[in-house]
Amino acid sequence: MSNITRWNPINEFEDLMSRYNRMLGLGRSGEGKDLFSRSDWTPAVDIKETPEAFSIEAELPGMDKKDVKVTVHDGVLTIEGERKHEEETNDKKVHRVERYYGSFLRRFTLPDNVDENSVKANFKDGLLTLTVQKAEPKEPKAIEVDVQ
Image (cartoon, rainbow, N blue to C red):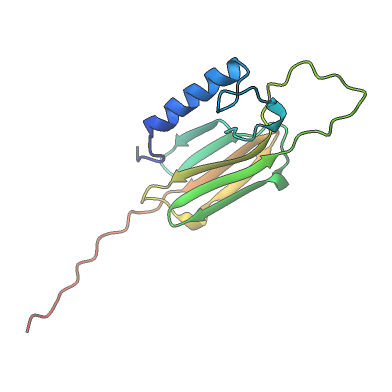
């Protein structure tokens, strides 16, 4: 299987520290922070491969397809969007907030054996499914140079 995303151990460490701080009710800097203002969530993604295509499924519960944008540029597939927080009202008392709101951005490096123009997207019940068809890898082309 071709590598679709590059592993970065620093990101995993930052994610671990962020989870630890959230568990303690702390912000990134260690100060108390209202979770309503957090905007650094990342949707969970599954990547699958068949002989014909790659499939990327992103969980986006509570979102509408108009709030999600998918682009492909220079071999990088980008999923971005924003989950908006519901308006607060004075007749509600909030006891706990565990869901994240705000903007997100996910990027995936596409392998060489895909057709970037074939990306299809489907959004249903909070699940974004992207399908990228495989293509024959581009054969390196030898150019003969006339030596004079």
